Amino acid sequence: MTFSNLTELIKESSPIIITIFIVAILIMIVNLSLKVIKILLLKRARSKRQVSNIKIFTRILNVILTTIIVLFGFFSYIGSWTSLGLVAGLLTASLGFALQRPITGVAAWIMVVLKRPFIVGDWICLGDVRGEVYDITLTHIYLNEIGGKLDNSLHSGRNVMIPNHMLFEQNIINYTLTNDYVLEEVSFDVTYESDLDKAIKIAQEIASKYLKEHLLLGKREITIRVKMEASSMKVRILFYAPVKDVYRISSDITKEIYDKIKKDKNVEIAYPHTEIVFKDKRLFRK
Image 1 (cartoon, rainbow, N blue to C red):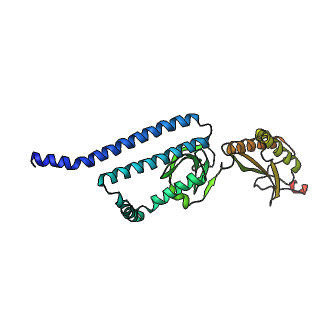
Image 2 (image 1 turned 180 degrees about the vertical axis):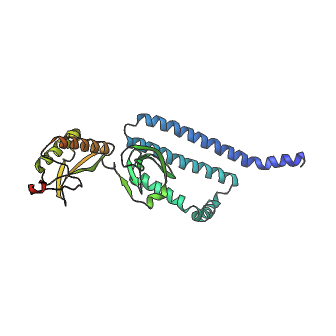
Image 3 (image 1 turned 90 degrees about the vertical axis):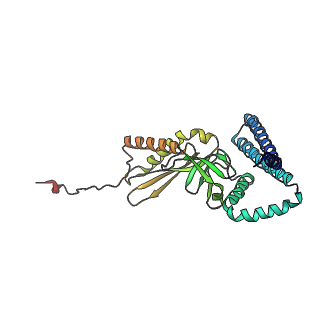
C-alpha cells in the first residue's frame, strides 16, 4: 500500500471515526452528569421510596438519552433520515425473534416502573427465592437473599440476580407493599389433664410482653385459638409482627412459654410418649 492510498483510506474513514468519537464523548458526558445528579438527589432522599424513584428515574433518563445520541450519530453519518423507518423495521424484525426474553425483560422492567409491585428495600418472594430488593435494572432484579435454605429472616449472605422476564412467569409476593407487618403463629400442645385456661393466660401474657410496642402502634390484637387434637389440646397464638423481626419474636415467645410451663404444675406440655398405668395395686404384690 502506497502512502497516497493510506492517506485516501484515512480521509475516507475519518467521518465514521469522528462520529464514533463524538457519540462516545456525549455518552460519557451524559453518564457523568446523571451520576452527579443522582448523588445530589440521593443526599436529599428521606425514604426508601424516594431512593427507589431516584434510581429508576436516572436509569430511565440514561437509557433514553444514550439511545437518542446513538441514533443521532448513526443517521448523521449516513446522511439519510428518511431511512430511519426502514432501518427500524428491519432491526425490529431481525432482533425480535433473537431477543424475545430480553425484550420481555424490558417490558417487565417497564411494568415494575409503572405499576410498582415492589421497590428498592421491599422484602419479596419470587418463585422460590426470598430476599430484600436492593437494585432494579433494565435486565435483572437484585436481591439480598433472606433465609436461603434456612427458615429464618436473616440475610444469607448470598446475592440473587433474577432476570426480569421471570416476573411474568412467577408469582410475586411482597411482604412490605402496604406495611412491614405479617401474620405469624406460635403454637404448642398441652395435655387434657392441664388447666387450659391457665395455658391460654400464659400464652396471652407472654405474647403481649414481646408485642407491646407493636400493639401500641395500633396493630391488630393478639388472637388465641384452641383446637382439640387426638391426644392433646393445641393452643395457637396468632399475631402481627414486622417481617424483619418476626422469627426473632416468635422464637422469644416460644422459649418463654416453654420455661413458664415447665415451672407450672397445673399445665403440662403434651408430646408423643407411652404411659403404663396400674389400677390394681395387687399387681405389685410378690
